[in-house]
Image (cartoon, rainbow, N blue to C red; front, side, top):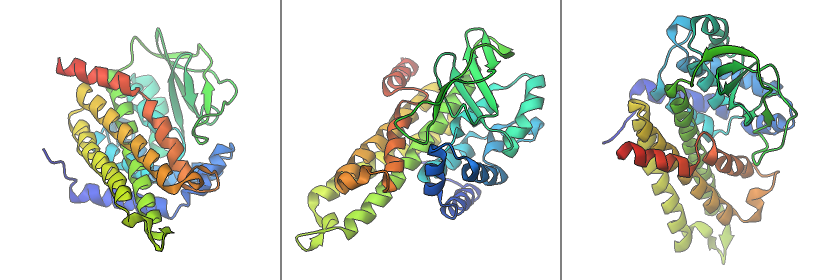
Length: 316
């Protein structure tokens, strides 16, 4: 089955691409990694104005959603530009907060970009807990509004600043989390990883066209072409799985999309690093901002093993 975006969805992706291209995201990423959030929050506000976060918030609370297909389209672009911050966690929070009282109090600000949210299982690391205005803990007894966070810890991806949320806090909803919210987290992560992989491939193709050995472009070597072709095929196979999962939101489809997109992005990152050489991993070179993100997203909201197990369970 082919999944093609309609004209409105293509225009939405194009507008986000233009917005983020003009925003100098590498600078914002490096500042975010140092705990300087001003430029990242300004970018966050522009994304909110474009309607990105409203896509996960119901219309009753000043949102436009839930619209998982458009969210997937948006997150591909966010991944292509390596936008920093708890993007997945914010849209997941919007799906987790379902009780009318907390929803009325918290969701309009998330949709408008005035608040940033993070979500984590109790005892696990949360992304950007030091910055987040809304810290949600998936506790054994239900969804809680965590009262604070511990010290920031380094991550493989410097732009993913990790903290543990403090236990306790207001109980927003009793019982297990809404399954659809966790599926949305996986879908958004898959779309983000797909965008990261596409950016890595694009940058690597451009690099091997310019770099020369023995008087010819490296990109003309057959072995290089094969590595890039393998990366392109993996990403193009992942794309319809991501869009198809956004249509069905079935657990098996979302798990398949997550493992396919994240493994494709990770393989593309390895190819990109090999073809760039050591310069690709230096902090001063922008490619590293995507390399580290591909590795981090691979295990976020479901490891490859967990996702494969969910695919098998759905098929059984």
